[in-house]
Image (cartoon, rainbow, N blue to C red; front, side, top):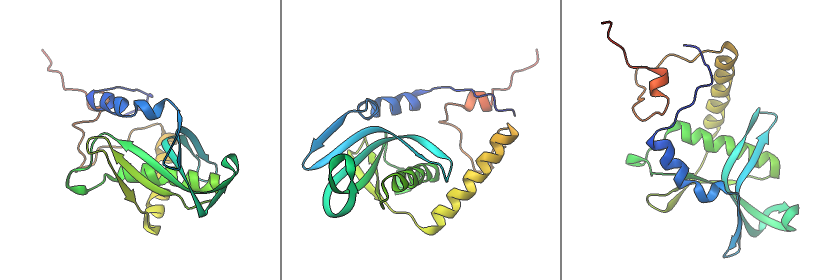
Length: 181
C-alpha cells in the first residue's frame, strides 16, 4: 500500500485532543516552586527528531542543571499526557518510545538527564518512567526502519498480532471489502 499522507480522526483522537486542551495552549505556570511550560517545540539533529512535547517542568534544585532562562539550577521533567492509564499496568511500546524520543531531545537541548512521566487524565495520576540501554537500541533500530519505510513510500504490512480496532486510520489502511454486485 502506498503512503499518501492521509489523516483521519475518530473518537479516540478527539478524546486525546480534549485531554490535551490545556497543555496545547502553550501556557506557562508556576505552582509550589515548580515552573511549567507547555507545548514545547523540541528537536535533536543527531537523531533526526523534532516535535512538540506536552509539558516541561523545572524544579529548583542545587543538584539540577543550570537553566539560563530562569537563572538557576533545576531538575528537568517531561510530562506526557495520556487519556487513560494502561490496562494491566502495561505501557504500550509506542508510547514508551514516544517519551524516550522526547527525553533524547530535552537531554540534548538542556544538557541534562531529565526525568520522564506519563500523566493519565482518567486517574489524575502520573507514573515515572525509566529507560535502559536496550530501549535506546530499540529506538535507534525503529527510527532506521521508519526512515526506510518513508524512503520507499510504502506502508508496512500488518503484523499477525497487531490490533487495529481503535486506530483512526483503520478505514484508510484496511478499507472494508465491498461486495461485487
